[in-house]
Length: 319
Image (cartoon, rainbow, N blue to C red; front, side):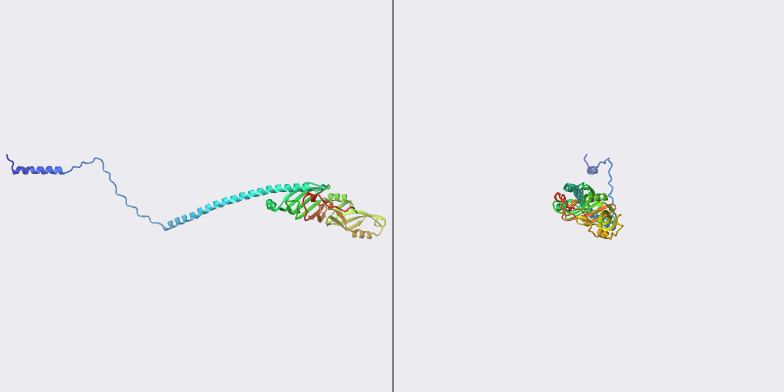
């Protein structure tokens, strides 16, 4: 049977449907859950800047740098000061050691230089700021000698000496020297008795600024005892007893003794020589007496403190 036009037309829609089925892509569905990405959050609006805060932070940063520099400089200065203090301490300690050594050395040399009739310990104190600097300059500015228990020919005395410009070489002369000697009445009377002073019998009696002594003399063939009050004065290497009052003892009341009194008061002062106890060139500058004893001030310029000088004393005239 021949196919007619109607049959072709029936098959044509089927082909079209088949074409449509072949042209359509079937996408299989994914069984995994789809991740949903949230939209990005909107950017926060810019924060407003406080000018006062910015200015404060700027000032703080600017102030921090000088503080750091000052801190560094302070540490440097502290280190420098510590070094200087340490050096000064070392110099002070060294000067103390040198001072002690120098004082001991001078004391030993002076003690060895004392005359044979003088004995005792001598303490030395060197004044001034730096002994090392003074030593390097060649002389000591201020030196003090102390001998509180010195014996001069057996007579106990206390001696203090102040010397200025003392050369390191003791064979060179000292600029200036002042000595103070203190002696009890007993010590002074030992000195007087050893000399056998003419016109003085027995011991001296010590008063305020005066001394008293007794003696005897023949007046008009009659022995007369007297008691003299005298004022001691300094006269180089001699102490003079200048009479200022006279009292006559028994035996002088039966006749006129005014001439004797005038003679005793008018006579030359009684000399007490002290040169034999002093280094040559040292003189008595002042003397003061009291009931407790006598204080004698001596002075010497250009005196040497070596053995040759100190061992050579003056001399008193023979009586």
